[in-house]
Amino acid sequence: MAATTAVSYEGTVADIEETLGIVPGFMAAIPEDALVHEWPVFKQYTLGESVFSPKQRELMELAVAATLKCQYCQAFHKGAAELHGATDAELAEVAVLAGLTARWSSMIHAQHYDYDTFMDEFGQIGAFLQEQQAGD
Image 1 (spheres, one colour):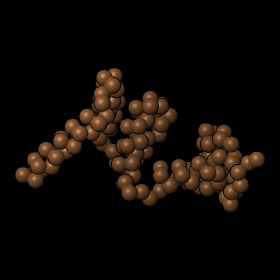
Image 2 (cartoon, one colour):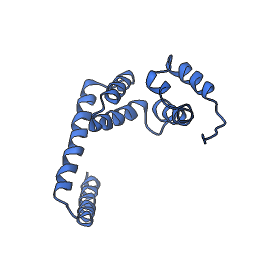
Image 3 (cartoon, one colour):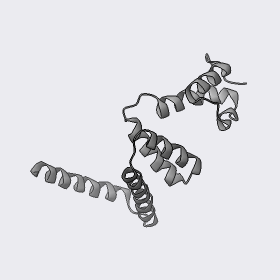
Image 4 (cartoon, helix red, strand yellow):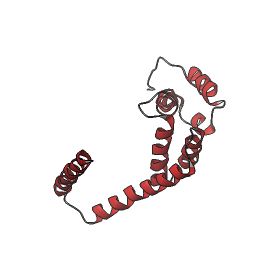
Protein backbone atom coordinates (compact mmCIF):
# COMPACT_ATOMS: atom_id res chain seq x y z
CA MET A 1 0.00 0.00 0.00
CA ALA A 2 1.37 3.43 -0.94
CA ALA A 3 1.88 5.98 1.77
CA THR A 4 -0.67 8.77 1.75
CA THR A 5 0.27 12.40 1.90
CA ALA A 6 -1.50 15.73 2.04
CA VAL A 7 0.73 17.03 -0.79
CA SER A 8 -0.05 15.87 -4.30
CA TYR A 9 2.48 14.64 -6.82
CA GLU A 10 1.23 17.22 -9.30
CA GLY A 11 1.73 19.98 -6.72
CA THR A 12 5.23 18.70 -6.00
CA VAL A 13 6.18 18.64 -9.67
CA ALA A 14 4.77 22.16 -10.13
CA ASP A 15 6.81 23.37 -7.14
CA ILE A 16 9.98 21.78 -8.51
CA GLU A 17 9.46 23.42 -11.89
CA GLU A 18 8.69 26.78 -10.29
CA THR A 19 11.81 26.51 -8.11
CA LEU A 20 14.33 25.05 -10.58
CA GLY A 21 12.89 26.05 -13.94
CA ILE A 22 12.60 22.39 -14.96
CA VAL A 23 11.89 19.03 -13.39
CA PRO A 24 15.24 17.25 -13.72
CA GLY A 25 14.97 13.72 -15.10
CA PHE A 26 16.60 12.25 -12.02
CA MET A 27 13.79 13.69 -9.91
CA ALA A 28 11.06 12.64 -12.34
CA ALA A 29 12.46 9.08 -12.20
CA ILE A 30 11.83 8.80 -8.46
CA PRO A 31 8.56 7.05 -7.53
CA GLU A 32 5.77 9.58 -7.13
CA ASP A 33 5.10 8.80 -3.48
CA ALA A 34 8.81 9.13 -2.65
CA LEU A 35 9.30 12.41 -4.54
CA VAL A 36 6.46 14.02 -2.60
CA HIS A 37 8.51 13.40 0.57
CA GLU A 38 12.03 13.92 -0.81
CA TRP A 39 11.49 17.24 -2.56
CA PRO A 40 10.55 19.30 0.55
CA VAL A 41 13.67 18.10 2.38
CA PHE A 42 15.89 18.78 -0.64
CA LYS A 43 14.31 22.19 -1.13
CA GLN A 44 14.64 23.21 2.51
CA TYR A 45 18.20 22.05 3.13
CA THR A 46 19.67 22.75 -0.29
CA LEU A 47 17.80 25.90 -1.30
CA GLY A 48 16.01 27.22 1.78
CA GLU A 49 16.82 28.96 5.01
CA SER A 50 19.45 27.29 7.15
CA VAL A 51 21.70 27.99 10.09
CA PHE A 52 24.51 28.00 7.51
CA SER A 53 24.95 30.55 4.77
CA PRO A 54 24.25 29.18 1.28
CA LYS A 55 27.98 29.29 0.49
CA GLN A 56 28.95 27.43 3.68
CA ARG A 57 26.27 24.82 3.03
CA GLU A 58 27.42 24.25 -0.56
CA LEU A 59 31.08 23.99 0.47
CA MET A 60 30.16 21.34 3.06
CA GLU A 61 28.08 19.44 0.53
CA LEU A 62 30.93 19.66 -1.99
CA ALA A 63 33.31 18.13 0.58
CA VAL A 64 30.88 15.25 1.14
CA ALA A 65 30.38 14.81 -2.62
CA ALA A 66 34.14 14.68 -3.15
CA THR A 67 34.53 12.08 -0.41
CA LEU A 68 31.73 10.00 -1.92
CA LYS A 69 33.29 10.52 -5.36
CA CYS A 70 29.89 11.40 -6.83
CA GLN A 71 30.42 13.32 -10.07
CA TYR A 72 26.79 14.46 -10.12
CA CYS A 73 26.89 15.90 -6.60
CA GLN A 74 30.32 17.41 -7.17
CA ALA A 75 29.12 19.25 -10.28
CA PHE A 76 25.95 20.47 -8.56
CA HIS A 77 27.55 21.64 -5.33
CA LYS A 78 30.66 23.17 -6.93
CA GLY A 79 28.44 25.16 -9.28
CA ALA A 80 26.09 26.17 -6.46
CA ALA A 81 29.05 27.17 -4.26
CA GLU A 82 30.37 29.35 -7.08
CA LEU A 83 26.90 30.85 -7.54
CA HIS A 84 27.02 31.83 -3.87
CA GLY A 85 30.45 33.45 -4.20
CA ALA A 86 32.89 30.66 -3.37
CA THR A 87 36.37 31.59 -4.49
CA ASP A 88 38.95 29.36 -6.15
CA ALA A 89 40.90 29.42 -2.87
CA GLU A 90 37.84 28.22 -0.91
CA LEU A 91 37.16 25.45 -3.42
CA ALA A 92 40.79 24.35 -3.24
CA GLU A 93 40.69 24.28 0.56
CA VAL A 94 37.50 22.19 0.51
CA ALA A 95 39.39 19.60 -1.54
CA VAL A 96 42.19 19.51 1.02
CA LEU A 97 39.80 19.26 3.97
CA ALA A 98 37.77 16.48 2.35
CA GLY A 99 40.98 14.59 1.63
CA LEU A 100 42.36 15.08 5.13
CA THR A 101 39.24 13.76 6.80
CA ALA A 102 39.06 10.68 4.57
CA ARG A 103 42.81 9.99 4.82
CA TRP A 104 43.06 10.30 8.60
CA SER A 105 39.90 8.26 9.03
CA SER A 106 41.47 5.47 6.96
CA MET A 107 44.69 5.58 8.96
CA ILE A 108 42.92 5.51 12.34
CA HIS A 109 40.58 2.71 11.27
CA ALA A 110 43.44 0.64 9.79
CA GLN A 111 45.11 0.76 13.21
CA HIS A 112 41.91 -0.36 14.96
CA TYR A 113 42.73 2.51 17.29
CA ASP A 114 40.91 2.34 20.60
CA TYR A 115 37.99 4.77 20.53
CA ASP A 116 38.11 5.56 24.27
CA THR A 117 41.81 6.37 24.00
CA PHE A 118 41.09 8.56 21.00
CA MET A 119 38.37 10.45 22.89
CA ASP A 120 40.62 10.90 25.92
CA GLU A 121 43.41 12.28 23.74
CA PHE A 122 40.95 14.50 21.90
CA GLY A 123 39.86 15.94 25.28
CA GLN A 124 43.47 16.64 26.20
CA ILE A 125 44.11 18.38 22.88
CA GLY A 126 40.93 20.45 23.26
CA ALA A 127 41.90 21.56 26.76
CA PHE A 128 45.39 22.51 25.56
CA LEU A 129 44.04 24.51 22.60
CA GLN A 130 41.54 26.32 24.85
CA GLU A 131 44.39 27.32 27.16
CA GLN A 132 46.36 28.59 24.18
CA GLN A 133 43.39 30.65 22.94
CA ALA A 134 42.80 32.09 26.41
CA GLY A 135 46.40 33.27 26.46
CA ASP A 136 46.05 35.16 23.18
